[in-house]
Each structure stands twice: as structure tokens, then as C-alpha cells.
Length: 295
Image 1: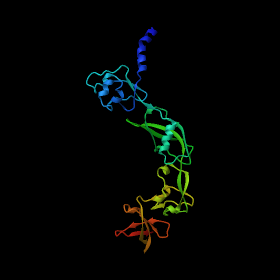
Image 2: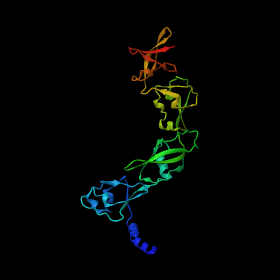
Image 3: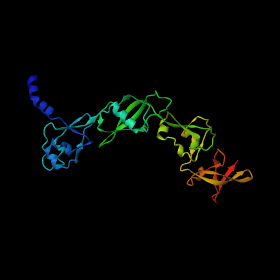
Image 4: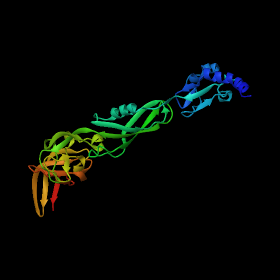
């Protein structure tokens, strides 16, 4: 009984082997992708969507009822016509290349310990600095989870991931002189150096030429590394020479110096007297005169 049954099934098995499924790339099967298998679809625009593509790893049989809404007469669909989604499994090398592409500097060390192994739609592989878990340059042996995604030509993005060990060396700045809290920072105070950097320093690097209007929020010694957490800067800051009215108790004197701040945010004004390293809070009165009150 089994042998005759195999002979009855053999034509279908041979037909299926001889007519592999149509491989489609997008979230929707289009007329252009299916018209070789179903010639009647050649009268439609190639980009005309017909029905949703199957999920990765699945096969969808195509029957006449899938196509009748697009064609007036009865549709002839050859037996065993089917579609399957083109899939892709990114390799560790694919992911490593995508990670390096978004880094502003080449990493000193980048080791992919483990990567996602499931198939995804073919598309653009993308990682971002926001996708990685917290990273400290002092813990370079930590294994970090880095989330990425594949962006297909159509349809939603699909998450992928890698577990990595990474170390990145970038430009940092060390102090050429000691500073006290409230001291103004200038490029002349800084010496460039190379050292492992954190993600915050990588995404928002300290730019020496953009420190005008910035002051120290804590004392630092000669040779210390200066970071953004050590300073406070006025957004859209400007520096201009002024003669400020300084009030010390009942004594009022006029002192030349520099006003740091922006006219859009006068509450952030700071005044640095000529020859002084420290900048102090300042304000302007109704006449535009800069006033500094020393308690």
C-alpha cells in the first residue's frame, strides 16, 4: 500500500521541487514579483501591492482568491505557486562594520562576544550610540549589550543585538593650571591629551574653542582631566567688555572687566573683573548697567 501511495504523490513532489517559491523582498507581495509565476498579472503596474508577505521562515501558497480583486476575469494560478520572504542573518563581521561606521573614531578594542542569530528581512544594518548600555572607560572588560536594527526597504525595522567589549580612545583636555570653583575657563588653560573616553564624551566632546562663558563648578588641580561635569556654560554665551558697578556693603565702585552671558538669558550673566580669574554672578538694571553685589 505504501509504494503505490508514493507513486501517487510523486508528481506533486517533483512539481514542487521544479517550481520553487517566488522570493519577495518587502512586507507586501507586488505584481512585478509574482507576474512570472502568474502571467495574468503583467497587466498591472509592477509596484502594485497584492497581499502581505509571509513572516520570515514561512511559506504562503498563492490561490486565485488572493488575486481576484485586482483582475476582472477568473485568474489562473499555476498549482503549487507560493511565496517566501527573502531573509538575512547578519554575521558578527556585518555588525562590527556597522558599529565602526557610526563611531567618530576607530576603537582601540572592539570584541563581539555574542550576536543575535535569527533571520531578519534583508535591509540596512544600523547601530547608534544610544543603543548601547552604560559604558565606563575604567571597565573595558565589561560585556555590554548593544541594540541595533535592520531597516528593510518596506515594513517595520527589526531589532538585532550584539554583546561587546569595547574601548575607545579620544582627545581629552588636562588643566595647565589649577582652578577654583567659579574660575572662568579658556583654551589657554587646557592641554590636549589622548585617553579612553566615555560615551558621553564621545557623543558630546569637550571643544576647547567653545568654552567662552564657561566657569568651573569645582576646584581642579594641574594635570587633572577636565570634563563637562566640571564646568557650567551659559547657552548661547557671549563675552563683551563692560564697566560694572560693584556694590560691597555700602561702597559702590566701577570696575572694568568682561561680561559672560547672553542677552536672551540675563539671569545667567557672570562678571569677571580685569586681572581676576574668578567670575561672579551679575545682573543688569533697567538702564542696562551691569551690577555686581558682593555680600
